[in-house]
Image (cartoon, rainbow, N blue to C red; front, side, top):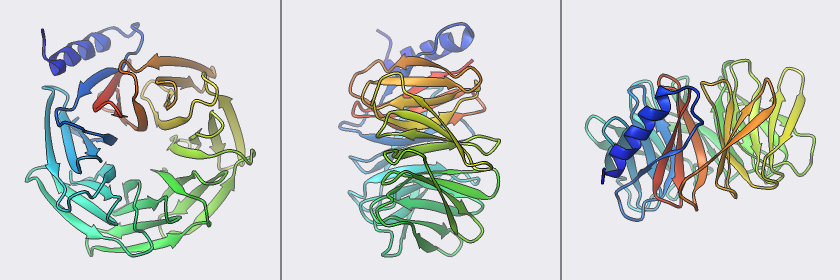
Amino acid sequence: MLPPFRTALLLTLGAMASTDAPPVVVEYPIPRPGSFPHDPTVAPDGMVYYTDQANSYIGRLDPGTGRFVDWATPTPGSGPHGLDVAPDGSVWYTAQRVGMLGRLDPATGVIEEFPLPAEAPYPHTPVVYQGKVWFTDANSHTYGALDPATGRAQVWHAMAGSVPYGLRPAPDSALWIAFLGTNALGRVDARDGSLRTFRLPDPGARPRRLAVAPDGRVYYTDYARGYLGRLDPRTGTVDEWPTPTPRSGPYGITLGTDGRVWYNEAASGLMVAFDPGTERMETVRIPTAGAVVRHIVTDTLRHRVWLALSGTGRLGMIALP
């Protein structure tokens, strides 16, 4: 029998060889026992990094060989949550349980930790943008930015009860926040941290994660109502499409290199690909039952979508045409 990573590699190559083949989720089992991958990110060289929240490790998968390595966080039990790769190759993550950000140097394996102000004790999602590490704090209704050069962070307060969750950069010197606690998205000006709120039409909407298209339109998953939504900030227009499985908890989301919006249904075990041109949706089942995809990233150079399969101790990959 071929080892799991070799089988995954052959499946990947087969999927990439035929543009007519239906998309599939290729799984990569993480060797550390009890692993709980929360978020993935991809470096320019194609290496896939992930947080192992349960064991408090930062891990890396080499898709070409199937080899995993991981590094323990300096503070045990820090609960690493989200992560992002900086232009210098360092990997930043949120240590959600201890109110810190961490920076991993993959070349040396050294991790440096940066304590955050008291207003942000539970950092959630990080984004490296314009020289700073931006982050949300879902539990404290705040968001902030750390300057790596000084190690100092500034924190801003969002609306009470807003639950700042997903965070993504935009092409116009801004970042967008999905407010899971209310029916709103927020645009943050990266120059001064100021926030502009965009209310969604349905009071029951609860956006969880989002993705920003090159034209500035913002796609989001409405976790509570079971919808994919899109906001055009220029006009305030909101379009919505029901998910294939009603009230299935759409969660992670990314823009694929195939021109489609990829997101997952947390309750059904399905990945969904939405074509904005035709408004058609295609579903792809995750092979191992019990996975919840909390975050999705796209490797634009290699036309791949990467998933953290929380609950099954695996990473997942979809090869796009």
